[in-house]
Image: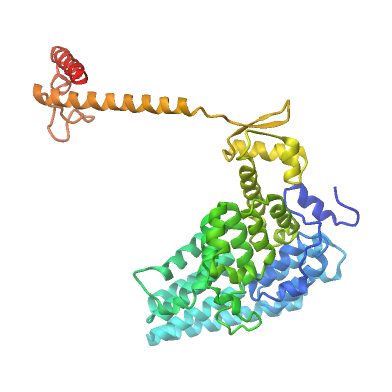
Amino acid sequence: MASAGEPAYFAKARQVGRPVVKDQPKFDLDAYIANYRGRTRFDRLLLIGTTSPLLAPEALRYAVVEAKEGRDVSRYDAALSAIHDINPGDPLGIPDLSWKEKINNQVKAESDRLETELKGYKNNLIKESIRMGHDDLGQHFHRTGDLINSVKAYGRMRDYCTTPSHVVIMNLRLISVSIDQGNWLAVQTNVQKLRSPGQQFAEAQRLTAKLSAAMGLALLASGNYKEAAQEFIEADPRMVQARLDDPADEEAYNEVMTPNDVAVYGGLCALASMNRTDLQKYVLENSKFRSYLELEPHIRRAIAFFVSSKYSSCLAILESYRADYLLDIYLQPHLSELYFQIRSKAIQQYFIPFSCATMAALAAAFDADEQTIEHELTSMIKRGNLDARIDLVDRVLLAKTVDPRRKVHEHALKMARAYERTAHLRILRMEMLNTGLEVAEKVKAGGSSAAFGHVGEEHLYGSSTSNQFFAENAGRSLRSGLRG
């Protein structure tokens, strides 16, 4: 049911399972969006506008302005559609048809001009001019939202790259378009090409921070949280010193993410996938990642609390920033799973010293009601994350008891059976060799053998008499061998 004063759009969004953030986030929208440039500005504004009822009017107004500053008419239409769905009476939702017609004509004229120039370059057979022509055409398609043709144009640059720097530029362009497409496999492929040990690109060494950020983002989007954490925490700290307001600064990567995002993504992925020892060693004591964590001190505090077994304090910090993270374009699809993994690890670590614990004690320790704790414990047991049982009558979580003596006996019996079978097979082989029995290959359909031609059933498997003689000898040898 929609809250008082909340548009019906968000009530429908809840019904279909889409996240709706009713709490006020901690960031200021103007300051937040000023850190980004390029296409991600619009994507983030549109996500905020369609997820947060409090920020929707302001975010969608900014989204319309951002769309009209570019040349992608489809984005302008998307912003107007969102405004119409959320607030049908808003005059900002009235389409500017003259602007759309003007931009469409300009885009078509620019496309024709670039394609004509490229044809001229091909006729002159100058490789560098052809490469630059494909590059210009790819950037034009990227700006106008034609991502498929942009990828094709950048891909055609490959045959005309004559220096390592050309290869680096081409792969960076493909990475950027693939991120906008959400083609995470292509992102990983192009990053690996620049990291290939067989090809050392000096220019790529200056871009290690961007490559780590792009690979970490692709792994995060694919659900590989541990590998994503490793990429983020090993990102070169040179990105921290980048000037986000200077498009000419090559160290900045704010067309995709900011250094603050690297700290948040890396910290959450590490909390969800690493144990306390690894968090201390590879995150808190990591000199590279420390520069990023200084930008987001609450993430550092949350990790420090987790390492110190202060799980309720860690979870309280994360919960206070849930609204902010649900408004992040890359974190939103994975936030529930990340938080579940973090809480699961905390509950596991908390329960290790106990053979049983009451639901009330667990609820108090993790600042939740008993019903929520019961649901979480049930999910953890079903997933295999927690080896325990729930007593619903006494409201107690019981650890499964393991008898060490029984385990040793079972292991010894298993080894004895394996030894007996191995001994039997070895004696069996010796008797086969002593008897002169030959085993041909299995007869194929059609009556021919691959190696020996047609082999009769009696020759292949032996007669009943020879089988009986062989079994008696094998059994006698086995018994004598075991007695010896």
